[in-house]
Length: 378
Image 1: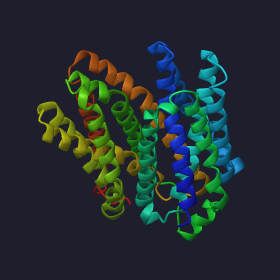
Image 2: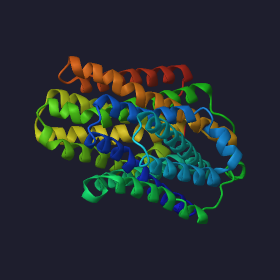
Image 3: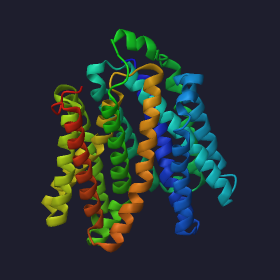
Image 4: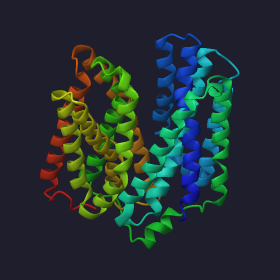
């Protein structure tokens, strides 16, 4: 119950920020901007997220979680409004970099808060609830794009207003004391280095996977002559990812996070193999269900695993490192997959299969190095 104000904050902030991410591209396209310029402005946001991952922990430690989140909300709102004041590309790039920095600090603050106050044996479930709220808000925010009134400057005002409004629930949020939470939950120090490495690589793979699916799956569907059904399949992909969040969290806490990583890997690989070999609508819906359920739950599972029993400053620093590796994956995945998509008709599916095959080998290697049965780490 004490996290309800935080989740309300996350809903409002995601509605504003996620809508703005899409609105920027749609607005620039309507203004006749070149595709390269639109891509550059879009990349500026993720570059800002990457940059902020170097100092987010110190910023949060300095201000505290609540005040850091308030600062990020105000910064995102002002950066959104400032886009309406000028059309100069360098200014837009700077504003999107600053917005990316604010968003990254907000993600680290919320995720370390959720993990820090959760009992150790329920961290995967807590992350599942967090991801469910986030993906739900992200999906709803995309509906705003179809409103004609919000296609121009009014859209920027709406995004800014939602970011400001997200401050209100924080007035009722109880400031987390992660050091005391560590004592009450009996938390120990860092998990072994091999476990942290497994979690970091998992977040890198999750970033590459989700960045690729979001950016290039519509193009892959168009190349397969399914352009009229892109919306259906993308909505089904995200819906299945949302639906499996809570079951995945419960199973990860019960049978072990490494066991669920193996299950997720099998689901993603099986989904891509089905897409590669078959083209029936029923088979494709099953394949997208497997791909969404496995792909969208990999990040919270690996993140909860990498954090182990950390709390306090160590947890915030680890969350920052995970954000950094996820951002690297989000930037590099679409670039590599895009090259493969140009050379092969089903290049995206080939990329994902190779990616999860490498991830499966890494899981097996960590299993052999640590000499623990899969699923014993909770």
